[in-house]
Image (cartoon, rainbow, N blue to C red; front, side, top):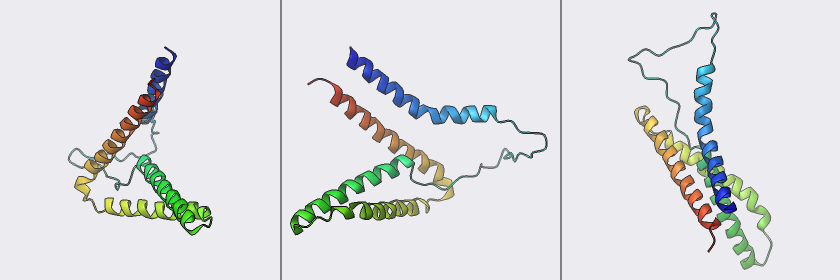
Length: 147
């Protein structure tokens, strides 16, 4: 019974963490007060709202950094065993440079997306984050279950 309550608590925290940005955006829009002296730019009915350029979400950046860090560290450990010299201190330097380069590369690819397709690309990246998060939650709950 305690494990069930723990799993429900974890799921509730995950749902709240996922839903809180949406709730805070709606609350910020409802609470926004504009004084009489400020001018507000409102899009006309036939105009499209401005679209920001598509970038990798923070979650995917963190995932790429973790994967690159794991691969570099494992590679340097095997290389140091092969050379019989400790070179694992270089892992942080190589990981930092390599992960930054890979993220920059993916952002450069995403910046070539036409303006018309940018909202769809942003939604697709959000879907990838949601699917990977669901796999992580499923795997974590599977590990918590007794064998």
